[in-house]
Amino acid sequence: MAKPTLEQLCRGFEEVYTPAITEIMEEYGLMNQWLGKDIAPLDRNMKVAGPAFTMRWINDPVPLGEEGKRYIGTLNDALEPFMVPVIDSGNAPDSGYWGELMCNLCLKIGITGAVIDGGVRDPDYIYKLGRFNMFAKFICPHEANKRSQLESFQKPIFINGVKIRPGDFIVAEINGTIVIPKEIVYEVYDKTREIVEKESETRKMINQGVPIDKILDMGYNL
Image 1 (cartoon, rainbow, N blue to C red):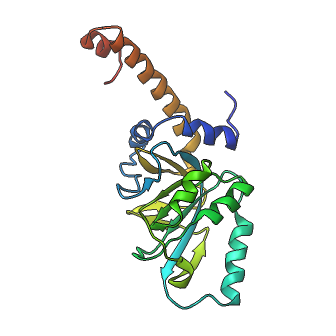
Image 2: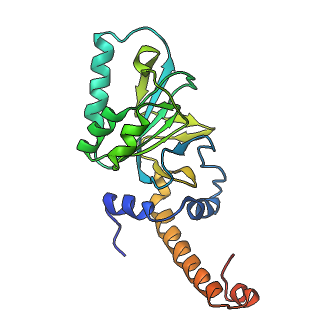
Image 3: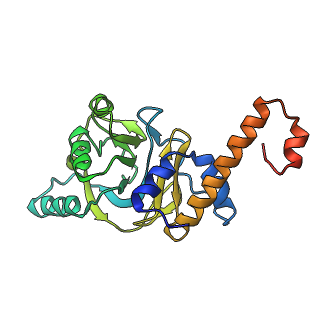
């Protein structure tokens, strides 16, 4: 079977659900790749999958100088289609790290979602866009740039104890946001598709009234 393209990989992961993926990753001894219960979509139908573009902010109220503005400009130039920006906010309680204008900028690049371990601004506008899939901890009206500093991007970060490296694969949907190590992403993809197909068959048999013990004898899990 030919290896899927990056776009096919992203779209394929968007069609499955994270519980099936975590089941596969447990076979690799990866027991906690979930970013936690607090990171949630603005709307339950939002989904995004793609390689992580990592950012780490620190709580520092010093206003951005010209050097800081150039640094953020460099960040924007580094973004590529299908990436999923992932922000470690340093647990800032009063900063919104993403807004509707940033969503529009990313959509122009070919990026359709982001994950923030912290606050997001402009939820109504983002929702009305209908094309950007936003995952965050809470809604906040404050600009992050006046309360935080972008310390680094495309370096490893940690969220909820889970290490996220640039290029590790993010899958986010209503069940949760998870991280798949980039070394095994194609293997996990193939095995997850198999699980989803098998569960569809199990669902069909249950609806047809096939006895549970017979379903289990056939090697299907419930």
